[in-house]
Length: 638
Image (cartoon, rainbow, N blue to C red; front, side, top):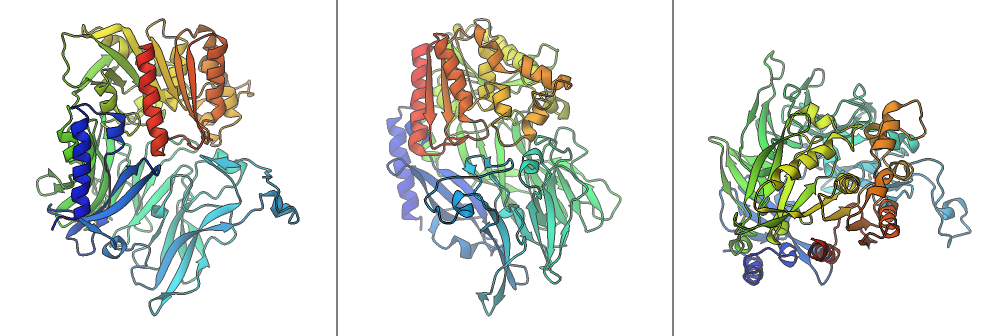
């Protein structure tokens, strides 16, 4: 019988849809269910998934968990999801359990050094990495604990990382996938970066460490690689796969799948220059791996064979095609693979792929009722020539009920990263469907610096942040603006992170193209960014190094030619600036400097500080304020 809570969810969203009058609104966007696949049940018959629904009154997202048959059918609310799913933190032989616990390792607080001054509110540092993402370093580190299970009860836990000042999971993005059991239960393999303080801030060298249960010893399994190593998993045959980047200090290097049988390592995806692996899972038989990767403006599903000890080469096969994103792989049951899929008009739902013929069927229908009452937006691929005569993919998103005989304002969307793919994504902030539903044509170029178009295209942006990529943006908007239905007198430019930087940069070089700008968490000044950001490998790689190194021609060019602060005298266009108060990646001072410059130049400008947000906007009420201010500004200035 269909679960009552699930029916209520559909009814609620249907009611909202009816009120939306066929156009997506911010309120509607923030009532959509956020579907997340948790895994395949132990018996292989069901998919367990969660649905997050924003609660505006409580300013949080409430999550419930459901089960649905692999073949489709009615979703049922479950309260015992952990009991239904395999527990990969229990060793395969059932004798041990692993977990991660925060352990106090370093003295940082004033009261640590002066115990009699308990009310002091002081932090004392003698090295970098004193804050990261949105948190000040407090001397605590996530450590992997191993507990024996005796007669069904956990015994005394052992910290296998001892007193080391290193984290597992890695912060801020790591999770349970950072520590796993070997298939024979003899070892725990975990991910960490064994650098501390200033060295930690300079390095991307994460490694895989194997802790031997019997001997209590630890070995570095990836010591030869100086870039990222992460997400280890084992197949049933005992072979280990993981994701790897080769280049030290380069966080956006080509990411490949590597497999070892304990002695021989094979890079399975090195053969494809255009593949940058996002995520992966072993097939049930252990002979191949499924993975998703950006390709030509979308995220698609692939399979790669593992040849083992044979001399055969790994074979890569693309399983899905279409203008949509396969943004996650949930798991496999027999010949069915469960994935998460979305596009620019639809938030993610779970789909079942029949591996016999690669056909795809929608499995969950959390938001179907909501979308049934909405006019969809046409998305179109367009190829645009760049200034150096290369072909660039540009996504163009049209308003619902588009009429080519009319004229529409257009927004140039600048993607963040800088090296992140612009695909058929569905964002709950930078939502193309919502922008287009407000009457704007969206121009979203796959400018250089994006994976999915070959390594050369991806790497061309490094040490050239404000160079050819800016010309790519202008080439895109100029090409689309030639269409008779685009109002060339009503062009705007918007973006966040590197996209926010792009807005600041274009504001000084757009030659009257744009009538308004909106920047979120953008870099305004390279010098102060170098002096206040927390992950130093990024400016060292992207800018070429520190601003004080006069012998470094690449760095000196970056600070001179690509810092938006150097071109503020050319600013002449209204600008709205958003910035998170807890954004330590691109600190608040970047937005403050940009706003102060605009105000002192007499330019119409507004500064919106979200004190409790980091580089994202996570709280529902903050997000709605963001949306309302975004569209209010466009109505005022465009």
